[in-house]
Image (cartoon, rainbow, N blue to C red):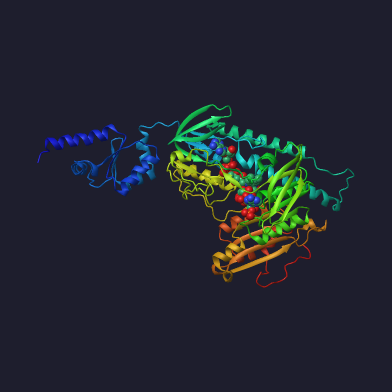
Length: 596
Ligand code: FAD
Ligand code: NAP
């Protein structure tokens, strides 16, 4: 039957809708699949026209016409740039495999393929990789100065106020110990040995300056546009970049990576922001901190306390509960005990309640009042410097994520992502320290950034493996680990399924100076139900990071106790302890060492 005039008119209306609009969704207002598709276009920042067939008089006729035109009777029925995409499944699939974006791109011209907010470990790795794969990339990096005014160059936390200056100051402390040991090895020197803070700071800062410069050059070489501006989302696919002088510019991109990292948290007590420093201030501090109170007992607190004591300062650590929460507690206790026997004082189960300045200066004098976490006891003491190291807050609350609908975990400010680092808004990805439930480590951020760029732009499917990531705490006695802490392994596998091998060891280099026997410690946790596979590796001793790295690779290959037994050690080293361990914890056997 030939179409009636009414049908012709209606068909004309449908065609006009499809031809005149970039995105048309033929929909029914109550249909959850239609809502899903409309939400997708909203999250992509695409304006769309939705014709709700259940709300128009001729809705069922339109549905018939669509059936004739497309062979599809159901809703949603989606058209993008005059092309029929299909229903919900096909639209979502097209989004996932990029064809939807290609259809949309016929009309939308973005300034960049990718904008990365944050030029730290993760952001730089991701932006350089994406540019190397031929994409047009911009990276924004901006450091908000600390309350005391410290600021730094390109490269993020690790380079400027994290791993790099921390490890170099740790080295300064280790050299102090080596100087003492050297006399026993025959070195003779008359001059008084003392440490000069200014020389150390200047040399370390000048090395950091060279790294900052190197990053700028490598961005330029790789054709990544770098803006020293603060980025925040203002609308879908669009950010505002504000530079140091307050000048605002706007840029659009097809995709975004958020890599804004974290900044130190304060105590929120009277005097903390005015008079205390954090790790963001410490490494460039214009003067030697003098008698120092470190508040906190995790990585940052213990590492900083360790090197400050190592260069000869009077250092006290105020511990709220336990050392190194989340780490194997036997190892954490041993690392803390070593610090205690090497000059660091600990005030346990106390928290500061106020900081008062008694005298300004470089350093000045501060009065700290603290209260017990277990009773009413209150103590007060004077220090030159108070270093607050009580954790870090994600930089996610002031970057306009709410304007484009990116969800954060309101409790901790972190961003939940899929195993492909995609946020709930499909064109926005996140990497590094701001990820919810992931590790806050430089190599993790770098690996995630690089692999993300390869998946986005080189067809790779390789995801970042967050399991069995090795790490080292650079306390005076370094603590390296990979895999489970003993407590966690017991929780997950049950004590009866595990065999723990352990031993104390004495580095040969420490025997002649005659120091610290029976303090270095090695431990592996093996799963008896899985061929004694090593599921936890822990070492406390010199160069623990260097030792742990190799064993982490072995664990990735499925390291078992038998493989360790069959591996011939390198003598005389500390790491050889792992090839000769034969005392199990359950046996209660003697693990003390009489010689190396
Ligand atoms: P970051 O490196 O923090 O980079 C984020 C960047 O984004 C920063 O430059 C920031 O200023 C910038 N930014 C933030 N918001 C905006 C915005 N809106 N616009 C523009 N730019 C913005 N890890 C290790 O693996 N080993 C160690 O030994 C180690 N030691 C550490 C010692 C200390 C004292 C600290 C604090 C951390 C240490 N870490 C260590 C952790 C490591 O530094 C971080 O895991 C790593 O830097 C995270 O990288 P990221 O890219 O996520 O963020
Ligand atoms: P963190 O691991 O979050 O630890 C915070 C510490 O501060 C804990 O000891 C906590 O005690 C204490 N604390 C919190 N609030 C307090 C309060 N109000 N008063 C007193 N103490 C308080 O933080 P972090 O040490 O800053 O480390 C952040 C991340 O940086 C780490 O997760 C790590 O991945 C990374 N990092 C890595 C390295 C390395 O690789 N070597 C070095 C430094 C940092 P409780 O245990 O009682 O909560």
